[in-house]
Image 1 (cartoon, rainbow, N blue to C red):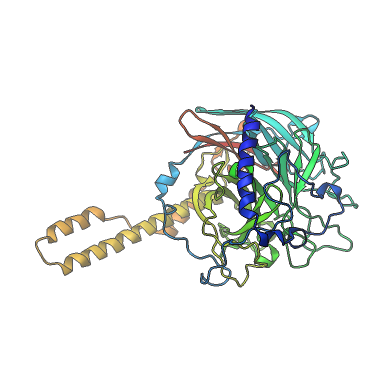
Image 2 (cartoon, rainbow, N blue to C red; image 1 turned 120 degrees about the horizontal axis):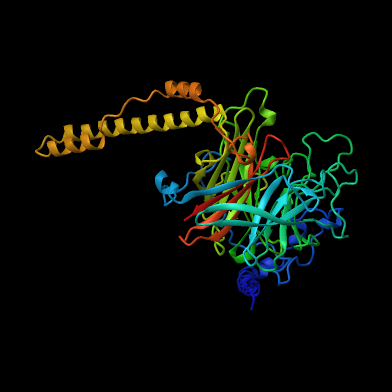
Length: 538
């Protein structure tokens, strides 16, 4: 029995359990077809097939999600804002979090590299086929350079570091009629905007997401394209498509996904029986995008591999890390770029990558661990605006500013990091002073023979700390923040932190750590780079 066959059998068992849980008389009378899916698309490549995998579905196609899903909580914080997470192991000291992730290495893919007659670039997703130890990477080229496509590669990584990537082939994605996808300017529509890709652990097929097309200010007969999740064979041939939730649609004014902020990330969960997707930004009806003052609420969706919508959860995005320049708001973007199941059989915990770009300040990329348990299931909530919701729990695992990445340091980034450190020191100093005052008051109230012992504790725990002048520290950092040249391979002068969009697990190391691989999208721009970064995660 092959490993793929073994995983299929395991998936069948899980699928059977899910079917039993979902199969109730009340559910059987409801139709998912009219309530959960948009109108049939004109492009036959987007039409859902009976089954995009060679195994029975995980649940009947005409069933709605089972009753008993978590209801909206009676109380939360102010409408449309998340409730605070309960105290748990999610409050972890920074040094312990840092010990969970360590840097293994990075490599920069040469600009203009040609593979099978195509230009390697726009790499926005990556996944590993554990059976063959081969990787697949998707390009977000909308057929404007070459046909929308993916690459296959081998990556050399071990306990001693990352030793490079070798591209072994490239294939275009094909439509149901066997043709490749047209360019984004094709008047007949049918173009795609590829973003993420996953290897099906049951079949070995490639599931990939694309964001569709919805210009902010459509003119005349501008063609709109629905976002979708499609399935391809390893040679690119069309296999099928997953029914995406109706609220992902783009045809209703003021409703649905934003342009270029749609189905950015997907991952398999629960041994391949579930497909989890994350929107890059909030739905139009869920509120505005993040600002420097406030984050945004986007959605994480859980479906069976047959398309049955099980849940949608609020995800609290971080605010912009700095204030955009007055004329630079249009060049600012932020959102979720990747999601990855933390464990193969765990349906609740995932790694989430958030990426922000602010003109003049560059990129900020952060890696979070999230847990959907206890979050509000909002699959039946048309809008989060004005409603009380509890988002998924999240905690920071890594800020990419802390990685020793190659490139030329942006002076603004140097100054910002110095300011963040100064503010942290100031906060620690203020906390130390507060503790000293509290302990002193405690001693003053107890004028017994224990005074000396208590005062000794105060002196030990709150040794005098130098005052921290945040402004002075930041000003000094700005003066000293000259570009520190650490050229990448080939002497590339690019920012160390790039537009990281793809994420996958690699092999397990002899230390017991798992390799986490991340790839950046160079946007086919000369001042950007396609970087591959390897981390070791406990």
